[in-house]
Length: 398
Image (cartoon, rainbow, N blue to C red):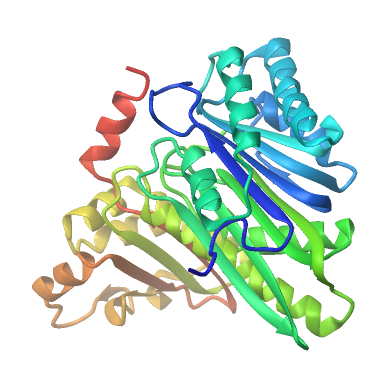
């Protein structure tokens, strides 16, 4: 069976273990390790109450080098003061001792409940078992992807490959994210590996370029996480990106992986039954395009209408109207998929509400808005808002 997990690129292993941090009989500690030192890059949340692992992770990836990643689910180690930072460092130290590297070459992540201390006895024993389980197999990669899940219902993985001459280069990724999704840098927890050889400075550029139109364009509930981390490690065991063609191919592959993972997050949003894609064209500026798309995408009225299959396009108009972007209402055109709903300041003639309702009950719902004010465009991915979202979050810690 072909490997489509985080261990697909050459040089990478993964391991996972059950530590009992939140639930018994569930994988909740994971480790990714490279056989060789990697160039690395990462982006993190801008939330001012960032987690202790984010504080430590920023320090450890600053020099552009990593050898491993360690993650626990069930407790986010956020708002835990000096003890939280010490615990994040201890996680790195334990992995480093297990694989024989420097602890500053390990990046930590934690996800789960905010404001609770990590049960370090359980975490450290889980790390030991995860290190013992390290393997380059697809099974190990899938186990790692399961170990990082919290309210996620589905494992989220993606791979892309390209050839330069006779050499095949692989980019792989996995992530977790279902609720508290409103990226302001990257999003959730996402881990990327590649066997391309990429200098750290170039890797940072590639990562930031891939994150902006993908992870930074997905929202579930417009709640910016305290733990958001996206990191990439490059082993260089395939070939160096020493040509413009190789760099372009790598950028495309990385973008494909990030796009797939971002879409999977939207599809697995807490309580979600369908994905909503809001596209805006004809904006005066890129900032206007993004503001318009995001305002529509995060509207509870729009999201609940999508959930109910209610073709109440007035909610789209209302959301757009509350923005301060440049446009003239009479020049705006709104479409559901390819069906025009609104143009020239009025409803389109002969709208079939039953047909529109069926379109809104598809797994992928597309709303397109042309502002008629310029040439800039943008899009945002989100999901519908269901009763289950309230149930999941009302009972989150109880």
